[in-house]
Image (cartoon, one colour):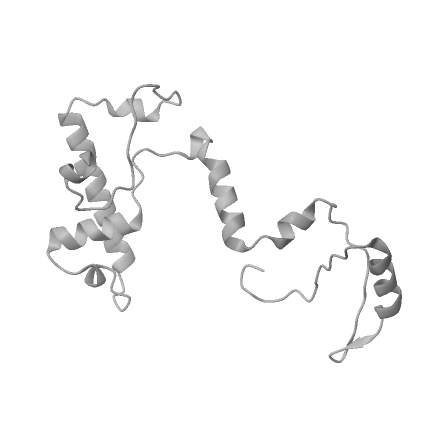
Length: 162
């Protein structure tokens, strides 16, 4: 489950259906760790075997890749927390660990405020460069313009041209 507590159930996949029937007949209502086991056929589809064997990271990556093509989930001005914390550390001339201090009661608020400030600066820069910010909210994407995102903070222009 989400909170890592067991629900007390398990799904077992057998290679041969007759082995599943044999296990059901021989193990149902038998004691296991002080409790009686109750085995019933699962109502999961036959194609669920593939999903059951995938680990969490593969499932998450598959879900992220599926959402990339969804126009509604793609925010051009999204900033990840790592970029924001690096920006704040550079701006305040402190280490990144000082910005993300876990003992601080308001580090999440500081990070959110820093993100807001950085977004405002980005919007101001784009406007000064003659870029129409309303074009970012359009669901139609350009075929000749690309946006490079998630470039690490502090990357030099010469590094991008290499």
